[in-house]
Every structure is written in structure tokens, then in C-alpha cells.
Amino acid sequence: MTERVTLGTAALMPVLRRPVQAAQTLASIDLLSQERLTVSVGAGFPGRFGKPMYAASQVPWERRFARLDETVALWRQLWREPENKAFHGELLHFDDLPTMTSPFRKDGPSIWLAGITPTALARTGRMYDGWLPYPPDPADYKAALADVHRAAAERGRAPDAVTPALFASVKIQAVAAGGAAEVAARLAEYTAAGARHLVLRLGTTGLEEIDDQLGRVAELLPRLR
Image (cartoon, rainbow, N blue to C red; front, top):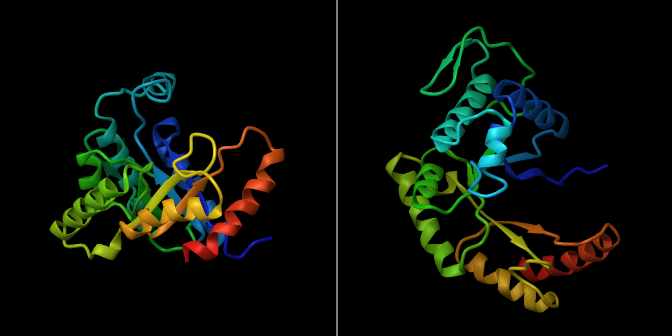
């Protein structure tokens, strides 16, 4: 039904899924959507979406960031090197890996990291394709993006190797609220700080409001361009 709409996660916690099966699922979605999948991932945070989720998944909370990075490395190996049947990291170990569905893109879908801690910024610059923080202050966004670019340069990557994105709520729990002009002006502060891909969360309380909110977002687009 669509040709341009991007499918995405904001953000997927890989720890809640078996890593090999998750790679197969993501490759299938990338293939079916013909290159329109973007996978944003995170390691979770303390609270009800953190430690309890890890416990329920029978995965240690400790070294969660290393586990996340290794999971992403495993996914990329499965997509890029199907002939390589072994993966041995510090935490993840596999032998006789299966051959799976090839994604639409040879290297698999883009993988973005959600996070704004200093270590998350460094890891984003070193190995991820994009950065999707829940928005800090625009000035902090600009400074953090500079840290991402610095880490990318230290790894020998071009600055545009990392897509600077933004995850923003536009009604309930809003980062930006009001009429189209007010919301556009607020979001423009982030595009001025370097954001180039906006993910707008519709903080609605019921399905009836979704059409109305989508219409309001549509009003924003010409202003944001």
C-alpha cells in the first residue's frame, strides 16, 4: 500500500529476543519492505522497562551495553557473511550458525542507537548507522552530536556515516505542543542543532485521536522542510 513509508523501532531491546531469530525476522522485514526498515536499538534503563525485563528474559543486567553491541555485531555477520558459521564474542558464542534469509540490502538494515550518555555517544560514532535520542535540550543535542562525530572521525568514519535523528512526542508528554507553527518552531531548534530525521510520537490516549493527530503532523511537514 505504500512505497516510501519507513518502518522503524524506537527503540527495540534486543535482549528480549533470541539474537539469531531476531536477525532472521529483521532480514525478512527488510526484504519484504524493500529497504525501508530502520532498526533503532537500546539496552534499556533502570525501572520497570529495565531490570525486570532482563530478569524475565533470563539475561544478566550487568554488561548490558556490551551484550547489545555484540548482538548487533552478530546480526551484521549473519547478514553480510553467511558463509561464516561461527561467532565468538565476550558474551555471545555460537557455532554452526544457520543460513538465513538475505535482507534486501547486502549489509542489512540500518541500525541506530538510542541513548545520550557519554558512552552511548562514543559507541554510536564508532559502530552505529544512526543516533536516535529522546530529545535533550537543543543545545545539549548539538553538543552530543559533536561528540558522535568526533567518535566517528576517530574510527575513520565520515561524519555523514551516522544519521542524526530525533525522537519527540508531540502531544501528551510533549516535547513540542501547540499549533502547527508552535510545534514546527520547537522542532526547528533541533534541526538547527543538526537533527536530520524526525520521529514524531503521537501521544494519544485512544485510536479515535490518531487520524486527527496525523492530520496535524501533516500540517507540520511544509514548515519543517
